[in-house]
Length: 95
Image (cartoon, rainbow, N blue to C red; front, side):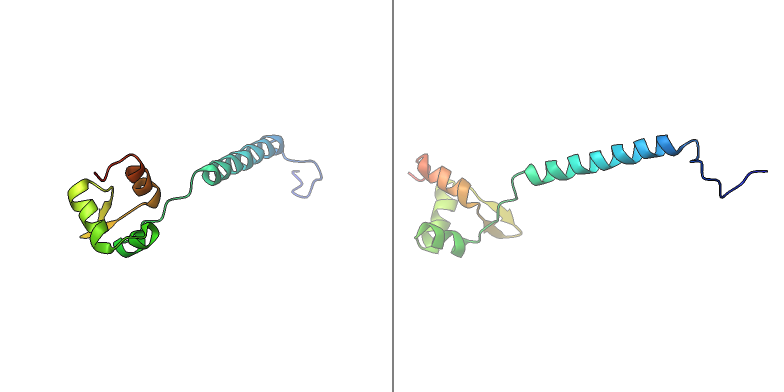
């Protein structure tokens, strides 16, 4: 008769342990990959980027409109990544 309370492990126990270890390793790898990635950059509105650059909002708007200051549109609003804007200005993009 099959005893459900026997002390011997089921025949699949080693396989299940192996699979659990592999899954745990994979989860840790994925988490490490996620933390290693650069965090998303905050998008700044016109007033915030103007403050960061020490210029007026009008100046920022003109740079975006007429000189190609990098931005993304969120609805009908321009948003800026500070690092991209600074790189653009350093490369002489606002001539």
